[in-house]
Length: 511
Image (cartoon, one colour):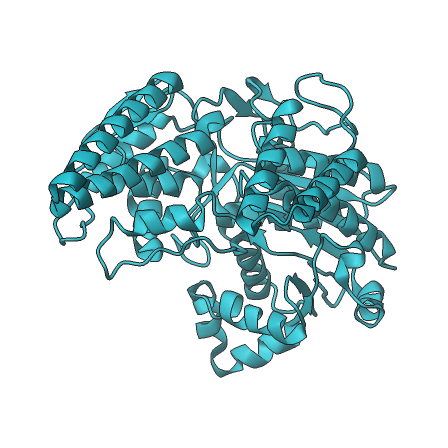
């Protein structure tokens, strides 16, 4: 990001945030009316979009933003910028404000660059980096693949080695003043109790197992991939085996999935290679739809809690495993972006590393029981329609605090469905076959959701946000405009937010 006083740049790569696979989403799509379409199985960069929109809207004097976009060339990168960023409804406020000057303003302020953080030097040429090295003084890295079960080679490349590559790039900039690295609060794994804003030492593990070496993990992933390709296996089988490898390595060292494991290793590399580079590590919890800016309720993609809410609202989930007394940590996307901007202003030229956990569980918690009641109330009053256009009647459902019992129940259901389906096929009952087939798909989706979110449905941790609270206090003392840059979770009324903002946004943007 580059202004009249300073020259600043944001370097990002694609952020993939679909916990459900394209196949899973297609199966879910089959339960909806024909005219309803889900945004499924693709990559999203929505936090970056909100950050870009916010900077350009509130600081129009900014000189330039460099956006690193994963694309084969400059033309493809520009197409992605136009269609996947500037063309979104997210920019409607800024577009209305600027009118006919919108395109010219964006061309002046944004320089889109085709690259990839998983490559050394971010995959950029010498000509591309020359101007950037001389003008950039702030780098913001939000590049990540957030799929819990991403294939190991991809997750290592983006989440782990990508972090190191961005640090090296930032240190090469002649006037660098700050690197902001966006991680996740869940690098803590499945820790219980109060979780502090502390850093990870190189090679530190959650279960005490020795031997975590990132170079060795990289070689393991490369060698495994090479061996699989040498066997001439189908790409689908290779992808599955690389996903399994990631989960195995994560669990070996105490993390629940590939995503948080590779993000934790990314933090380790940032700490090791930063030298005297000022660094801020932002650890958001679960980021959800905007609460206020640029307008309430903007969301893109099917995220963690939205997957569950969607399946519940469509009548797919009548039974689900969760500890109703557990706290779910959420933060609206615009508030998280505000915290990034305030941290940016606060830490310029301060040669230290600071970690901010940005969430709500410590000072404004909301329990699963409260959220379940809110969703029941909303979908009872505002039911969705099935394929025949009839309203779906949702019940309170059965909430189990034991995942094993839930898995047994689903297994038994699936067993009997398969038996009945076999008889229906022999009898030529196509109507019964179709009903049972759809029910079987719903069971598989429920099992998938439970497996993916198991570590978080029974999560017993509370994220202490002392540093973040102090950042708010300091900013207020320095005249923070809270109408523009508020990120205090105490201001959130969860019932009002979900009933009037978040759930309606899911219905609007996902359907």
